[in-house]
Length: 165
Image (cartoon, rainbow, N blue to C red; front, side, top):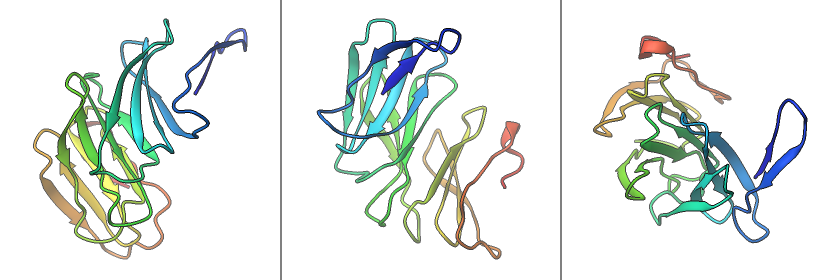
């Protein structure tokens, strides 16, 4: 991942997710110093932006290929997901221990979209035909929305997790 200064447009740091591997997504932590990346090597990584040091690499045989990640507002967890097959399972990770807290096994289809509510209470995943709402603390599936959903290209969840679009 490349870290830039938005004011000077200067490259500040290169964070090599893996040797020659692509970084699919990068997300900042609320503390302003840590950055999470997810890459083609099937791992997620937590970095210190100021030092460029790899703080933690999250390995799992659970989630398979993952193209997306979100950082919880508390900065203590991340959620990874989005892939091409039902073997690609979204997961909620504890950043401190580097362990999977919960897997979010959709009842149908591969996870094509992933979003986290602004308050961090709910995780939303979606297949091409349904949207799934999960409790972030327990990993329990709360709702399945499937009224005329087809070829979903994105999901969004409102502040307070009152509406999903």
